[in-house]
Image (cartoon, rainbow, N blue to C red):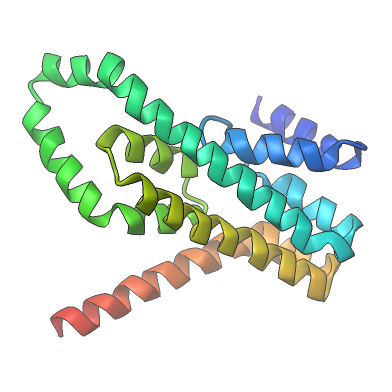
Length: 192
């Protein structure tokens, strides 16, 4: 099933409505869809490198708006679905503690998930469920998603198709290593 979704998404790159399709995929990926918009973003930029940054901007805006929808899902459905489950298992206090911790570090969670291969939808929904400050969520989403999509656009604009394999296979790993080094640096400065 996942391969079918991937193939369908790739076929959209050849459509005359590819930019609109990219916006839709970026929107729904931030809240429910399993395929990242990169699979459409990359072929679109390779096909039209002079429009790379405009394509990245469309992807960023749609992804942030989709993140807001994911936030809404977490905020609205949590009371109807999540809260009764927590009550059934007697975990309201544990969730309250998680909520406090998450809201203290939530901006970092949004930043990390926004640039790494971690499913962004998990963080958008969690942010809504825990009531993460909405302006903080929006700002972190803009920075994270913009960083991710504009770096891809810049690499493709500069190096073209030869960089595609690196992006598809290793860019997520590079972002993850960057985040680990960033947190490691903060840890060293604070505790050593």
